[in-house]
Image: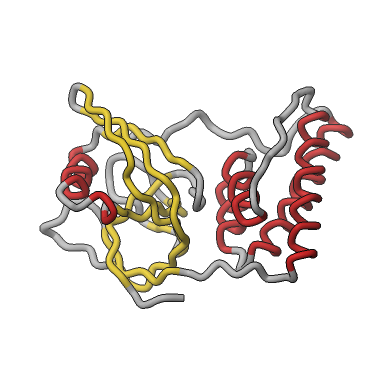
Length: 218
């Protein structure tokens, strides 16, 4: 873990992960102000925190309850439209909120956060074996769903985040994956989740969770 630092917050109805791209359409004035503030910074400093909403809504009144672990992202691209903007950001690292720093002069939420370390959690051989199990479980799930996925060439940490970010799971389950203390634990949890979903498809022809339509429109 590292010393606390300030981050503007972007609450979402979904969980985001490091090393995974994020696309958003902004139209609320508070988030357009956040975008203006980010663009005023040097490019390497255009970082904000994405944190999932525990209770509340993305739009309208401020969320009443947020999860305390989120993902820092860096703004990488902006496309302006009429009264809105489409942005692309890239996930960087996990953080834990230590204190909310909401300022009545700032329309969006802010916090003091600590950057969380991301240890492997196992010897290299065990880590790569767990990654191989995730790949196999993912291929089996895709086959059960009647689809195919390309070979995923990624290191174990990146693989874990990529699969966690892409696999349709409830917010609470994805949050638990984000909060796993190590890459190894995250990979092991993914294997269990993928195998559970595959068994459900084989046994019932259904999946446990159907994600709602993309609602990341702020």
